[in-house]
Amino acid sequence: MTKFCSECGSAEIVQRVPEGDQHLRAVCDNCGFIHYVNPKIVAGCLLTWNGKILLAKRAIEPRKGYWTLPAGFMELQESTAEAAARECWEEALARPIDIELMGVTSLPHIGQVYMMYHGTLADGEYGVGEESSDVELFAPEDIPWKQLSFPVVHFTLKRYISGEMSVYDEVIDRQTDWLTKGA
Image (cartoon, rainbow, N blue to C red; front, side, top):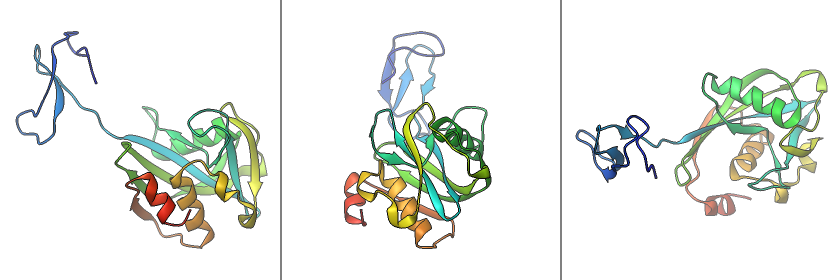
């Protein structure tokens, strides 16, 4: 929760529903500034090379030691596709080409929206980036399913391997969705 107003510096932050709104917000009683807290955008990319899928093993928390698709929080001044490409470089020293949107997954319970892309690994080159401890190309039958980091990674891989390439829009309500929908 915000303790000081980013507009005027006041410590007079209260929780209330502003006029014309329906949600409880942090509002500065001094200057009236409304401190909105909105979902974070995560952009990632499923890269392939010669029928194999690039995965990176996380070297940072959360889920350190688990495999993931290169993905991370979007930065200001970049598009979601640029964010996905940047994450490929940061996590796997990989350059994607011909990336296209695969789908959108909302995780309202943690305030995140994933924008997942698909593309080709440029020249088949990759390496271990700053946030990874290992990076490998996996044939679909060799994917370490029980060692995947997040539900979105699981669903994205399943959808790609099944050949379902139409753009999707899904919601994962809770961790139990991952367990009940086919982990």
